Image (cartoon, rainbow, N blue to C red; front, side):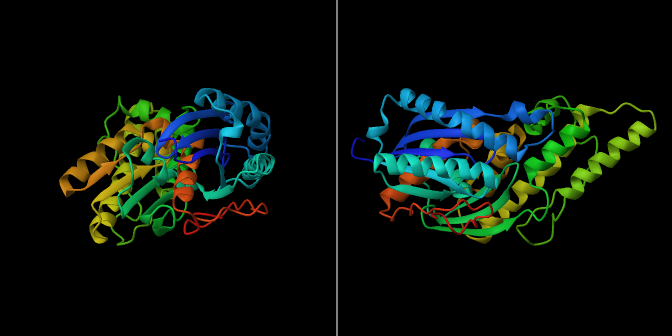
Length: 343
């Protein structure tokens, strides 16, 4: 609707420069410039390279988003930007750009939490979030279970990874198997040709009674198994190992997510973050939600990975809630806690 706020969102927490434009719950533009190819040869994201790429991509990506939406900067009602968590240098580029646009246009500025934005983006596809819902957020930097009574003001941590995030484990196992970077899509594709029951890999913290995750031991177990095969001069069944590893990750994630919903008497589970694009995670989450009588919400894959649309979506929610905007002294906080939705 025309009377809903038109919000421009800026996302630079890692290696994607994302610019989104949202009116209410309607997505008008989602432009992304990724520097992933520049990091691939290092097997991981290099912060300095990412920061430089954001600097170079910012203005062209904003211009592309405006063109896609068929608007000008003067039409924007508010600017939202990821203030944390993420890579410090990368965040600084986005926050500085958002301040410049805010000051130059005379528009309010909203510094938002990256994880809360991953929750809010689902509204662009499935409408307003149920209150409350449980959110399982899984990416290269985060694996978290959250209770979300209100995405604009009340997000509560239930559990998180105690070591490697799920996406980080995907990257490391992909490297062990000589697959590409980022590892998630390569593992997903390879696993489709493999047998997940061919090898049993450990499930960290599976029955510990918490909502926390641990994937470091799993990653190490895969590496040791592959090394043992190679020492014995035996071929490594890449597809089978990928499938077995993926099954172990997805088993733990979905088991704990369902438990969080049941224990908190919540009937809706939202899955978000880059790993939510994984086909096996989506399938197992659907199976277990149906068995438990829980409604599953998962955005389409493009909205799961880091993007400006999610930042704009959360910004729109904050504007609609009548919350005061951020100060121009807004900091970038690489370890911003999830309980702080608006900075």
